[in-house]
Length: 432
Image (cartoon, rainbow, N blue to C red; front, side, top):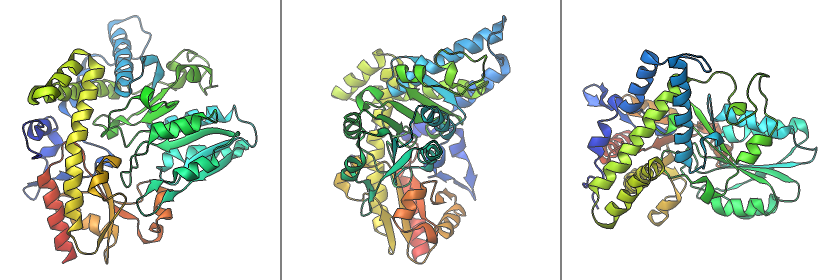
């Protein structure tokens, strides 16, 4: 099937993202840097501007703009719940970023631990889902590690089973790797974790732009993601089971409410950014409905039902369409990279395993440091990243920490085959 088939109108999608029109030397910049932060749609930009122009206020005032802000915050919490499949907006808390929220909750969990209690972390994760748990060693926690399979950068699930035990309290995993794209079998891991009575913390930052998320199906206990990775402003978002969020001893100022979600939202939030996130959710709803209109047969009926289900259904339809499009983009990217002499992809490369990864690819090239490759591409209007991207343990585990890490290409739903072709041509030029 052609990637430009009518069932996915990437040109119409790109029209929502004004930054994609920016050029370098007469050519549009190819933003292949999605894992570090995506571009944002007009719906987000306009919502931020509209809030600051007409409704900027703090909470609990007896006047119109304060009431409007409170209403907007209720709506964005409800939309966040719809995005992750939660039952209530009260189970959603926002903060500066995922790492800040993770530190806040890990510290609270630390207050409930006894010396010798165990926390499980993995070598595959972003350090934002490692360092907050390592910090609990100061409270007597014992850290257990899950290693990776170095040939394809997947988690060693037998190793996970081996470290779980009666003292396990929290297992922290990623839903998808921000460095190599590996998608972890979260529900299978949840079943393993819950047999010990432990809690499962899921970092879905890298999964959120690519995969539908349903915390009920995943059977997670907590899940965090970052709206600026899925076409929104710079924010972090936390979901947790209501009973856990209500009973954990949160660190907060004394006048802050004990009720959810306020007990986890330290200080005044970025109201303008949260208004922008509502705009992003509206964009994704548009995408879910637009895909239903462009798709024939049973899929059109499915999308139509999703549209009638309300916001949650429209968001799920959008992410389903994104997943289908990106699956084919991943195959095209891997095929192109395989044609380049001296280039080695780290992670899953087999086409038949494409559903086990996101369209995020890390690679090295013989004779070229990752920073050199990134600079070469950047000069040609192709944005990528080099280094370890805070996947600190993974880069060490595959032996690349001393040589500059990897070059990372991260596709998202507004990227195109033409951009992949530009990338491959430039890398072929560099390879000689």
